[in-house]
Image 1 (cartoon, rainbow, N blue to C red):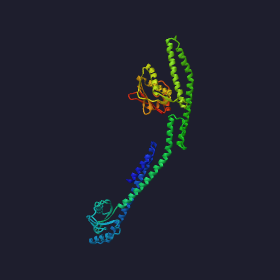
Image 2 (cartoon, one colour):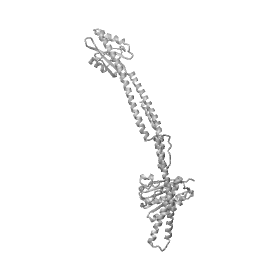
Image 3 (spheres, rainbow, N blue to C red):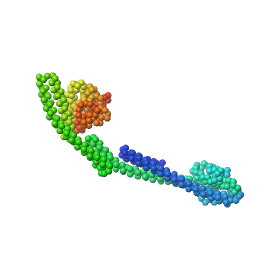
Image 4 (tube, rainbow, N blue to C red):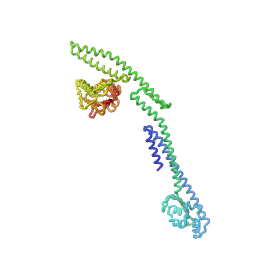
Length: 485
């Protein structure tokens, strides 16, 4: 039990110190469990082998003693019963190995007639091999517990046959197996200690080997996650030239190609946006000029209004694309100044509210009486964030007919919440909606970069933009901007 406890303690300590991971657990379970199972089989086999060897050797020795003694009495003892039993007593008294093995002479009816331990050797034995020896007229061994002392013993009983062919008693050799069992236990303990040492070596060597694998794998995983999150061009450094090194080189190559593609894409978007601005400006300008003509008929005026509106919408999209590419290239800086953000937010809400009213959407602003201090920020950029979020609420949740907006001061931060009452966002898409060009299952118009731009602007202010499905339906967008005064 102590060996098992120590092994359990070692295993528990190893598990607590070893880094968690499915590959590590599978490796240890597959390796350590197989080694432990094989080792346990070896321990049991060795213990059983030594036990069988020791017991068979002792039994053979006692069997030989019994055979020799009965042969002596058969040849040397006369025909007189009194002389026969007297010889048994003398033989028992002169028995040399009495300190290790007791010699007993038992009558046919089971009475202890003589013992090498003396006249007061104890009660008459009643183990089953005595009767079997009488009945079979052969030597019978016994291993078990003494019915009087409950001590584990080994005995060999041999029938004593008188010259007339009558069984007159039983010669019995008996000894305790305590020393023998102790030797077997020592073999078992030694084998278990060897197994414990082997298991410790297996765990230590496995841990070293796994560290040589898991550490570069962990680095590769961390870098791969960074690449997946947009850090294109990140490189993995590994000294290994094996399969792990090959994997790292493959990911490095993929990262470089993605970075190159991203750069080409950004440059293309930037150039395209610049090219689109000029004709859009011309279209917008001329549409406004033509709308100033009072002689234009109603149908033509309606068409020009549509042209002007769509040109403005397209211009906003182009500006979003330009902002995004500039942010990606690090060319955007904030014009930070102490700002009454509540005034900026309320102005944006009231301005956009009239536009939403034309679309049948109510923009409800929850006014707060609490004091909101000025915070350092870029009011123009944050107005852009508020407008984009409100526009998203109208595009994706406008069917709910209502948008709620509020601003509060919580834990030294200005917190803006904007909620629509639309269908919400599928749970599996929530982690992805802030990624560039991601539109998911939404069928609403747009490029899919509005939230990405907003998230970038908020992060540049040291804040956080989160999206979640609101209780009762709809989407809740929360913008938290810390007061860095």
